[in-house]
Each structure stands twice: as C-alpha cells, then as structure tokens.
Image (tube, rainbow, N blue to C red; front, side):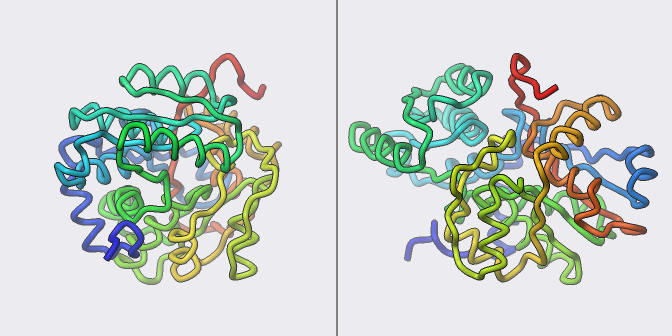
Length: 318
C-alpha cells in the first residue's frame, strides 16, 4: 500500500507534529485592532512567514524527509517547485544530512532561487510549465536515484501542513472559520482534516486568485479542472490542484472563494503598512477575501494562515 497517496487521518497529523517538533517553529498568532475594526470580526493571523525558510512548506517537507527510511534517503531527495517548497526540501534535507536536487522554473523569484542554493541544494532550471518541470525532474531522478518529494500531492506533505491548523486551534479553540490560500492544495487539505477532526462545526474556506481559479472551478464542478495560463502575482498559487488534495477538499472544505489581482495587492500592502509585517502575495489572498466580503466574517472569530513572507524586494507590486 502506497501511503504517500492515502488520505491522512488526524492521528497522522499528530504523528507529524511530534516528528517535526525539533525542527519546525511553533509560529506566533498575531491580531490587529485595526483589522478587527475594518472587518467587524476577530481575526487571528497564524504567521508562517516566521517559519523556517519563511513559509509553512517547511512543515510538510520536514515531515516527509524525516519519515523516509534509511534506504529511501540514501540517494537524497528531489522535487520541483517555484520557491517555498524548494527551500523547505533543501533545508530539511540539509538537516537530515542528505543531498537535495531541485527543479525550478526559469521565472522563479530570484530570492527563492538564491535561498535554495544557499541551503546546499543543486538547482536545475526548466521552462515554466508543469510538463517541463515533470520531464526535467524525471531526468534528475534517473541520474541521481533520489526520492521524489511532491510539493503537495503526497500524504506526508499534507499531514505536515495540517500541523499548522492544529497549532492554531490549540491556541484558539473557539475559532468559527479558518481560511487558507489554495494552489496545489496541500495546505488547504491538511488544514481541513485537522480542523474538522478537532472542531467538526468549524468552517474551512479556501481562497484563490481569480486569475488562477482551477481549485474554485474544480470544487464547483466536482471534478479536477487543470489551471490554464495562471497570470497572477501570487506565484505560490499558480499550480494546479493535486489529485489527493482535491479528494480531501471535496469532502472536508466548506467553500472556495476567489479575489482579483488588485485586491491581492491592496491586502498585501495593507498588512505590510498597518501590521509592519512582510507577507508574500499568495497569503494576501485570504486577507483580500475577508476585506472584499467574499467570506462572511461579521461577529465571528476567524483564523487566517499567513503562509509565507519570501518576497523579491526588487520586484514589489507598488
């Protein structure tokens, strides 16, 4: 039985929490009086921008890499990613003392490429299509014998990402809603499993750029619809929803909403200026969903997962 493609249970997420405890940070939860007044609710930001590698992806990558057998880990690990997962795999592999091979699209943010190399991973560039990523990765795996760690379509990754919501609900058990961005779906699916197991009546909502709305379309149609030409500033959300995350999202998630590009930029800038906190565009998406009224939060307690803060400072949207 291939456990990498089996839906994780809450017990699996608890095991992941124990496995990564010595490596990942337990990130802070921040609030803002201004944001609460603006939205008429109580918003709790789970700040994964303060996680190692500056993003939640370290949770999944460290869970996956530290759960490998010695045999699986011998030749190192390989993955394809536009950034945060690449950094996460590179650092987790370094901590385990094994090599990491990362395929990155040639348009990946410079700050993310530099970080991956700094963590000691070998980077191979490819064209910015999923097909190019996958064919290039196949060649790398064939050459190195490394174990492939998928960015999101992997139960070990999903379980690791689910530890974020688990921590948030341990700190704030009275939340009514949790909102997470959705790209490949690893975070949203892990969040949904954890949140619904801990608090069955909580609402779990995904937020996505309107310009890369394959998860929204797939959720509404009840079948996987691949992303077409995702032209969004939220570089972490340009990927198509994975099969395993989709099957979990369909079962556990209450809704997926979308926001336009200008709202993403406005929300990102608002958080930078008012909360004095660097966030990347991908996690401005759930903030924008609340600010735009796409999610009814009036009078409710709402958790928003701030997924990362790795921004190319040479290329800001304002």
